Image 1 (tube, one colour):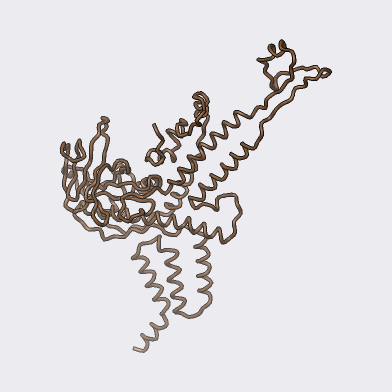
Image 2 (cartoon, one colour):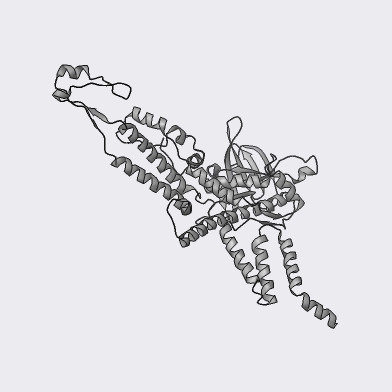
Length: 437
């Protein structure tokens, strides 16, 4: 079976280190490599998993601070059990975003259990489930790139295949992708397919339903590193022990010594008077050095495509470090923005399932560079201490409040703080105005 480095399974394996990376099946065989030698190389291969390390590092920054949600009681209740298995919305969205970073896009179904509701609490129980890109077998889009129809292939607990079909007015579970052999069906009246695409990168075309995985290039480089490490290991195995050269002129002596084993645990004698002193022939170290240099270069490439050049061992200037920090921060901002958009669509659908309208606000953190924030804060505090004018101080205080609190409080609270700043800044003017009345 040919290796498909663009498949969902390969990209998932690049993160987990399982399947072909664990068994060695993702190694590339040399044209003249014998079966037994390749099998041994597969057995001792070790996968250096940079993909998981870097993806988890980025994900940790993305979810270091939870999103700010100013939402209805309905959505707050949904958020506590977002997937119907008692996992909250932060846990579920972080899990979905990890998969999106690997696969580019995942599809979130905002579904609702069929059948009559038994309690009032059941009325607010839409739930989220996930579908991978390879499960989307058919779809239809409108001019703006929104789903008009989406068909997902699924596997039943019995191992049989079935298809879940969503349209703008209902869903069908069937044994075929056209919905002819129907197993179950249901309707809704909100005029939209309840499927949300969660991207990790902006699609090349705004109407595309899938983007390339954020970790795609990283996975390819990590696969290259996997092969390089294996080949270096094989080179070590073939060249670690130098060859013993022992001059022998007697054919009988040569026959007796053909199975000789020499190591640090035994000894060999020779006649110094008649020559024949044994000597070791060691292979050149150039191939090993070449491989080690290439391995180091590949590791640097992995960090480079992840915008983590500052992690490497090369000393960089302050300007270069600042640039790389900004690049990494821009990547985080894009992923945060895309996840925020997806959750807002989810919130709309959660309310739509119950015939309500979503009027709340969901804001994901946008600034992940604490060094830049510290510098901005210091500059702002210095500006406040200049006492240029009351109006200037008021503007600076507003800017400072937005920088520090904008992502950690609801918009209504921020508006109240800004009103307080305005009231404090104009207290003398207010008093003069009141006394003049």
